[in-house]
Length: 443
Image (cartoon, rainbow, N blue to C red; front, side, top):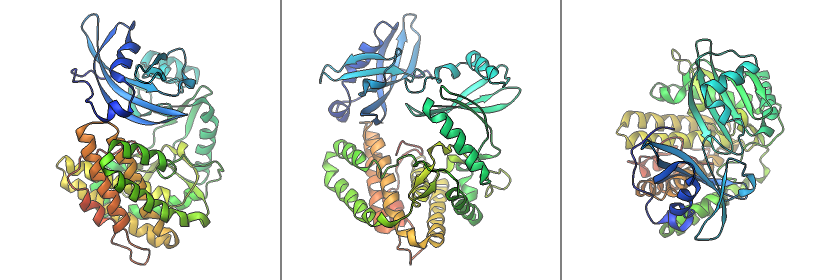
């Protein structure tokens, strides 16, 4: 884990009302490990089985005085705890808790074995893949769900994905089904029943790195729409990963608890989303990606409008046809806010223009579903808001309030199918000056 200067412990307020009694639970969990907890900061919170999974960055110091930061999780669902978890009790509530630290994720048993160069070398050799002196970097991590680690060596570059063991066979099958339709997903080079998959590196660079080139390039948006049509033809029958709409009650509750004075507004927004969503009952489901955003799309560096890779399709399955477009548009809005908060107005406007063009093109391609986009985008933005508000920090609260404005703007400013081209002007104006980073947990 990266080392950081010890900081002040998490502030009072929301974390004390909703989060576990971390000031007592975390030091108790580290007792006997040789590490002393110096400070901690809330990192994330999300549903976990029959409870909640709370993430922290925990600053520690060992007996030699060496400091480190350990990504640590407190799970209120102790049913998944294993031998690496510390079982303890919240002294404030008497609730039993399981505490564990990355990479000892109890639901991803293969993770610990691929986070160290010598161990991953042995693991890949057993699968027939030879690497020497590998360099490892974490590309993505969702506790209890998946991790992606990039491996660079003299021989090759591959991506090691770790998932729950029961997901290996379905994911391998989904990659084969997507490739059968000509979609540019990476090949699965090897897999192991304990949750390990080895994927080839796709050509190109993440589209998020070229947003300035893509903002005024209609060929890119047309290709995204065409990719959506191909995805819909993939022969799989499982349901897509649940999203912000599926978890609306959870997001509504956590957001209202974090921002109690904004509760009437939050309930009104979710009420409007549900009112519009109630008319979707006749819509046929189609295969969708399930978690589409710019970092899942790779493009040719010389021809950035040309998509060379589609990643992380383990979320794919049957879902509402509006979901992928909404997820991509919402992510663009949030990413634009992040760029503006960092003082990069040009990148922010590029994200917004791209979101506008995507909404217009999608509305023309599927006019019968175009009115589904606004509530789906608003739900995604509210989920991003919840991810910020539940951190319990002043910065997180400010970001969340700005995203409430963006969600309200999306519901009020998105056009009916007969008036394409206006897109999310209101949402954009409502969310100016925010500093929300792209990729905040939403679904």
